[in-house]
Length: 459
Image (cartoon, rainbow, N blue to C red; front, top):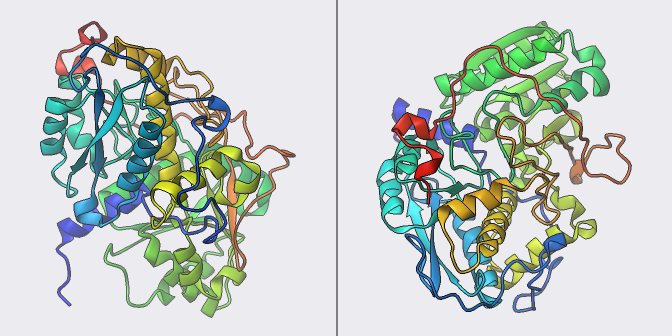
């Protein structure tokens, strides 16, 4: 088999690390949600009816007519072969249109396949044709921000990836996956080293894929942990293509007596490292497997290590699939997929995608007949406790720096992923987190001023 070139591997690693777009297989088993063809209500969770009939008359903005709203969905499908954002967007559009559309306007989708590297080309097309961008993501999303801001195009992404795009102007993240200047994982890290496993605080280890992108992730983690008084005693890199034998890494981790291990790398590599650790009988107190491993495939690949090692992840305040029976909004999410895409595999990024679509639709509907980008954006950022109808912890969309203050933790077990008890009673989340502000410069979000624009230009 011919090996991939180093630039392609760097890009691929950026995609899996920054985008966190691994498919989720730990959701409900087949047959546990609504049957295909069954009715799905117009109301979603605690939002009430989101879509419905109307009699619009105006063609009030680019991409908006009296009959329809044209929306772009960004995806790296041509590179990843992963249809999750397309599936989620089509599910939402079919559901919404079946109930009358957005105040009477039909949703029409333009799938913008970047093939990973063609972000600017797709963004220019979106600027030409679309009213907004909703429900998708591009692993190299920062490449398109300048063009997006230049054409004053609002974005409601399912996930954000790169500095420059994170919290950029006219970008509204219904379920944030990164913050511009703060550590989104502060609460999780604090719980790990001060409450869950305090003896690990003096012996943190990190294994990182060898790329500049991964280095930034690791540098942020180390800075945040050290602000909590933790000590990083071991930090090593591995070739981004993987290694044939992880045993030397396992022995190095054992030699340093690492008590807490963070893996910043391609998801398929962690089970191999854990197998090497298990083979030599070494078990850290915890391993931060990252939520791009919140999948059944990780559980299967890890094999015997699932029982021996202690893998934990932070879901950033998104409801876990394991709680679908007690979270009506998550149950409805499943029912929508059962009706409109019964063969699609549900994923954690798709929960974020549906939350983004709900925010877009609700905000657009509130604008009534005269739907403009300004009206859309202003209604969206006026939401100070957005939960996607119950899909996630509250997010203050008026606060670009620290919009979410909750987290929740999952643990991998032989029986599957299970929520960790954080002492919150019936609440799915622990809230009240004040995120650590980075002292080092890891890049800033792009603004309208950077392209010679301002909010007064938005109409």
